[in-house]
Image (cartoon, rainbow, N blue to C red; front, side, top):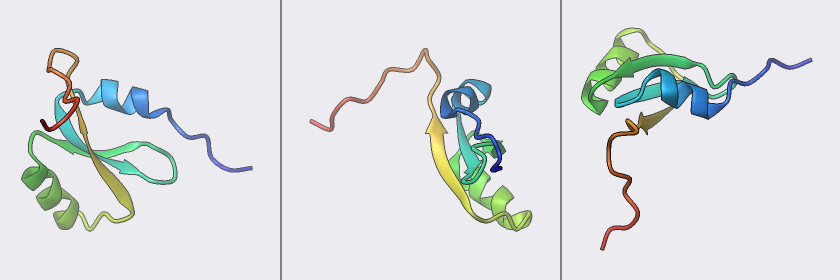
Length: 68
C-alpha cells in the first residue's frame, strides 16, 4: 500500500502567510519561510529536492483573481 497523502488545505492552514515546500509524494510540509528567497536558501542548505514550492496565503489577505 502507498502512503497516505495529507490534504493540501491542511498544509496551507499550518503555514498561512508563508512560502512552503511540500513533498510531492506525501504533501507534507518540508520547509516554510516568509519569502521565496529564504525558502530557496533553506532548501539548498539542507539539499532538499523533489518538492513543490507554493505560497500559502493567509485568510486575511485578499485573493488575487486576475491580473487586469
